[in-house]
Length: 176
Image 1: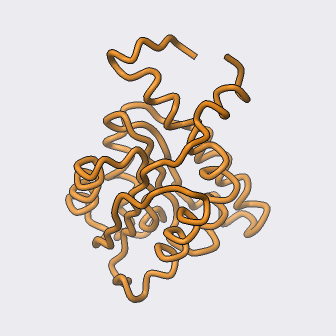
Image 2 (image 1 turned 90 degrees about the vertical axis):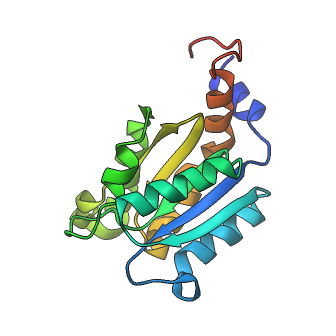
């Protein structure tokens, strides 16, 4: 099965949980999370849940566990991917990933470089698989969330979820 066939096979609504990691934003101030929830709905995906949590690894991991309990097939975390001492989302998410999608971070930084220049190298966007679901972690600015969604996540979300389900233990899939 070629890439386009895989993409078509994964062309269906996905249950997505949105997590905003921020020490300064609550739900009322979470413009990026609100934008992402609208974009998911407009694309025909289902919101499995939404949380704003402090940028603390234990709280981020708890939100991911909540996403799993809610039946999310994918989780999009925004915020906390920079280099400051308080930016700990990368460590929390990357430490859980069972398989990384290295190209996600590479492409995000390349696309971001086209918009903001060399500061793009400071982004620690990361994605991969955790407990059979896709996890994407992106910077918290609305521009970064929009870039990640429109150029990377939305075009491949169904395909990624399809691949993860296809290769799940007992799914009878084969290597791709």
